Image: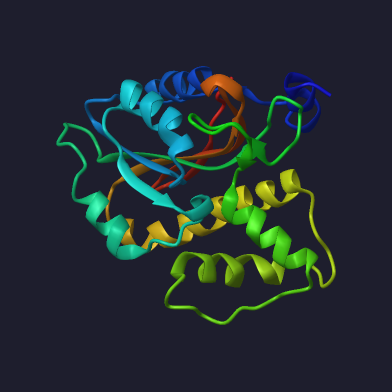
Length: 239
């Protein structure tokens, strides 16, 4: 199966990365968000493959406050988000933040999910590498939640994901990646809520999966898209 055929089968709602980020800009413009009055936050895996989404967000929203972590999981907390809240541009309206939060996965030229060609390497390697390690541990029957101070982010990843996976189960790579995307959609609002409590800040929270193909081509399978205001949340229509 080819790369594109695998993409269409496994991620049928995926669109090109540039189109996805442009749609965030257009959809939020209707709610008063612009690059001048909004602070972008970018959550993604710290993998160098994330340069694509960083470039697109920077081009349309300006330089983002980076929330780069292993697999994109929100292992940051109130301190980091509190710092971000202090960087919102001054404007006549309410303070505005745009959080674009992603995890990622690869598809190589042969259509293998969880693998991706990288510049300078002759053979594909895993993406996301941390989730590949985690799946390997599940396949070996290892379910260790002990905290390892020499591997902080991986310890936090295991502790967050293991309770969601039944004993003996090894999810397909794409299903595990969607689980991470859903965790991001749950954990980020929980972390940012106390930071913004009592303020009139408006924040758009958009989640998705970046799918890496060959020759630097990326797509995004959209997840949730919510606009949170002091009066409640509004579901955004990106399309």
